[in-house]
Every structure is written in structure tokens, then in C-alpha cells.
Amino acid sequence: MPSLAEPPVADFLVRALAGGLLAALICGVVGTWVVIRGMAFFGEAIGHGMLPGVAVATVLGMPVLAGGALSAVAMSVLIGLLQRRGRLSYDTSIGLLFVGMLSLGVIVVSHSRSFARDATVMLFGDILAIGMTEILVLAVTAALTVAVAVAFHRSFVAAAFDVRIAQALGLRPQLAKLLQVGLVTLAVVASYKAVGSLLVVGLLLAPAVAASPWTTRIPLRMCAAVGFGGAAVVVGLLVSWYANTAAGASIAALAILLALSSAVAHRLWERVRIQPPIDRKRERHQ
Image (tube, rainbow, N blue to C red; front, side, top):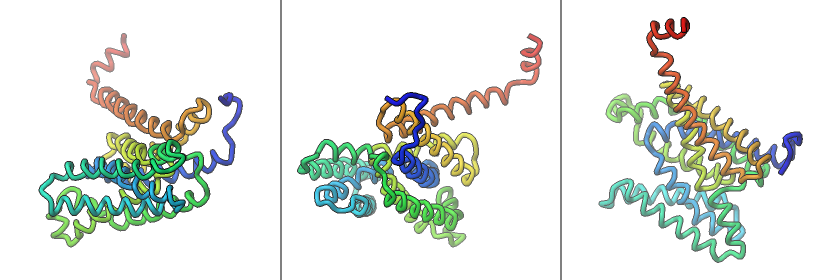
């Protein structure tokens, strides 16, 4: 275990920090809409839906991101088909595909000689092994995510709160919904290397949840979510370095802790803010 006097300046930590901050940017922007639209279960399903593609790519020695992206897109399409043509509810369809894709991924990767390691990386990520290629992918994804979020902001807002008004204004709510699904898929796939398919939802949801009590303006909420996510990455990596814990899990755990702390802090702030002036004067005299 490194001592506190030993600064974490290793090259792999610098790359991990860069990749983690980019993932926090992507997940902060997309996660805000996930929380607003109630798409948390969908994000979790996409995380598991990419496992068969990642498993096949791992076994065949192909790029895992390409395999994961194809599998995640297939998962999105299957969810849409079951919802439109099947008699199952939306959450039931996701739940069935969720378990099915996870099982298929584990079955495929079980043929690998390094099953335990491959399965661990698939589920929990390996942020300390991020290279420049993954950082470039995250940077391009972050730029694309921000561009889409800015360009379609009005459509996203209208579609989230009143579809009929969005249609009347010609904002194409169905396209907005499709783009949001695409952004969730893109965020999960791009952040896979950092925190894995199981923990990526924590980075997707927790910073947005932490930011939501403090502002009702969506752009400010996104910025706050990015800030909370970045803090989770920095502190999580420091905890991992000094306490010798799993980096991806430490980041996800810190994100959840920040969400809980934000909720408690906001509740305390509300109590102080609405406290009657007479009580405050009485406290000062006491």
C-alpha cells in the first residue's frame, strides 16, 4: 500500500484520470436526461446488453468496443420491438432481455482460458489499463454528446414534459426520444472500459441525482452532474491508489456516496433556510 507521502503520478494513473474525467463528462450530460426521463432501468439493460458482443470480441481477439457497440445497438432494437409488437410491458421486456444477454455473455466468455479475469473486466472495468486509443474514443464521444445535447436541447425538453406540445411546435419528439436512447447507448459503450457494464450505471445516475436537488435548470444540472462525476473519479482514484482497492468500484462507490451526501446536505440547507427569523434570534441570544 503506497504511503500518503508518495504522490500518485504514474503514467497509467494520469491516463486513468483523463479517461475517467471524460467518462464523467459524458455520463453527467446523458445521465441528467436519464434521471429526468426515468430511463435508469434502460441504461442498466444496455450495460448488460453489450456483454455478448464484448464476450465474442474477447474470445476472438477483436476490438471489444466494436463488439460491445453492436451488441448494445441490438439490445436497443430488441427492446423497441418487444415493446411495440409484444404484449409484455416495457420493464418486463427489459428485464427478460437484461438477464438473457447477461447469461449469453457469461456463457460465451466461459470458453476463454482466462474466464475469471475476462468476466471481471467485463463487469467491473479496468480503468487503470486505459490507453490513448480509449481516451481518444472517449474524447470524440464527449464532443459528440455535448454537440447533440446542445443542438437538440429544446426538442429534448419538450419531449420530456409534453409530447403533444413538442409535436405542435414541430420539435419531433420521436426523433428526440430516439436520440436520447442513442446517447444512453453511446455513453454506456464508451464508458465500459472505465467502470465496466455493472458499475457504469452508477456513474450515469449518481452524479445526476446528486445535482438534481440544487437546481431546476437543466443546463446547470448537467454542469453540476459533471462536477460531481469528476469529483468521484478524482477521489475514487486516490482512494484506489492509497487503499489498494478496485479503481472502478471505488469511483462508483464515491459517486453513490456523493449522491447520498448531496441529498442530506440539501435537506439540512432547506431546514436552515426556512427556519423562522425569531428562532434564529433566540439561538443567537442563547
